[in-house]
Every structure is written in C-alpha cells, then in structure tokens.
Length: 83
Length: 146
Image 1 (cartoon, each protein chain N blue to C red):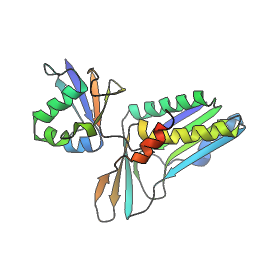
Image 2 (cartoon, helix red, strand yellow; image 1 turned 120 degrees about the vertical axis):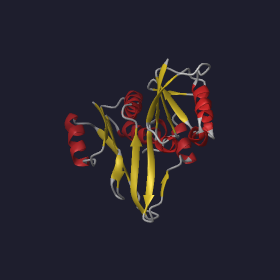
Image 3 (cartoon, one colour; image 1 turned 45 degrees about the vertical axis):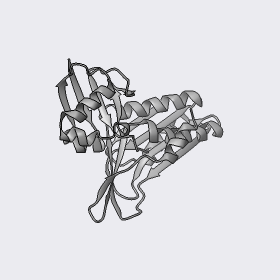
C-alpha cells in the first residue's frame, strides 16, 4: 500500500527532502516500525533517526505515538517550538 | 466568534482588534509574542505544516472557547521569516468577565507552544543558524492545564 511521508524542520533538512511516497514495506505497521525502517534504509535515514525519541509524528492528520498504526500519510518532525 | 489564522504577512493588531470588537464584549485579554533581538539574532524563521498547523490552532482555540465560555477569540500566528521586534503571535480572548478572558489567554499561549505544529529556526549575524530546542519550562506550563 502506498504511504506518503512528509518531513519538517531539522528532520526535513537531514533527510534532504520534504516529502516522498513509498510502498509500505512488509512488516512495517506502526510509526515506530517506519522510523526503524527509515533509519536502516540508508545513511541519511540513519543520521536523521539515530535518536527516535526526538521525533514526533502525525498519522492522517492526527498526532500519533510510536505504537500508532500507519495510514495513508505520515508527517515526521521534531518537538514543536511555536508561540 | 472564533477567528484562527496562520499567515506570512505581518500581523495587523489594530485590524484584528476591529474585527474582534465588533461584538462588544465585557472583558478582553490579549497576548502579543514578539521576536527578541538578543544574542545577535537577525532572523527568526517559523516553519509550519500546510494543513495541520491551522487545524491544531483551531483545536486549541475551540477547547479554550468552551472551557471559559468565551464570547469571542482571535488567534493569529505568523510563519516564515521575521526580524527582531516583529509580532509572532497575537491572542485576544473575550468573555463577560475578566477572570475567564485572562485564563483563556494564558491557556492559549501555553498550549500553542506545545500542541501546534510550528518550528523556530534562529539565524545570527555571523551566519550561524539553529533550530530552537523545546524548553522544559514551556512543557511544565502547558501541563498545568491538563
């Protein structure tokens, strides 16, 4: 199934792209699974996601935790600093 | 009336007050957050999500409007590049009485720092730039309202 991944702030800068679409790999069903898969995919992913605890996620427009099931799209980003 | 906006343009506080005050409210409380010019800062850049930033602001605004029975609420957050002194965020909450307006205003500014998809990057006079790290004090202030 297709999955659109968007990246923000330093996660975007380290990945070198704002968005990508992938076929969801077999065995990748949660946010934590995806982050581990991206970290193992290549060197950029490894550097970006070396500390998964520093990354937050939104799945299909809703804030998500590591155990949240994936949907059609996911945003990966650092803890927010607005205001 | 709840008005939520995420915008690149400078925040026009006089215009926002005019829109907000059309209803005639007993008590209004406001907060203005500006770019601090300390430590040779030349630019503050606010990155946002094209959909979820405004949706997140609207969520926080609706919770506040219900919790304190607000008669009107304005929340405007600027994004993109800003200079020291520029207004980053404007919150204006109105109710029949001051206690509700003041509490709602404080809630909104505390929560939008921890719940809304916005990221600050600072650029300094020597060309250095760095993403701002979340502050523990901000998290604690936001958690007081749980």
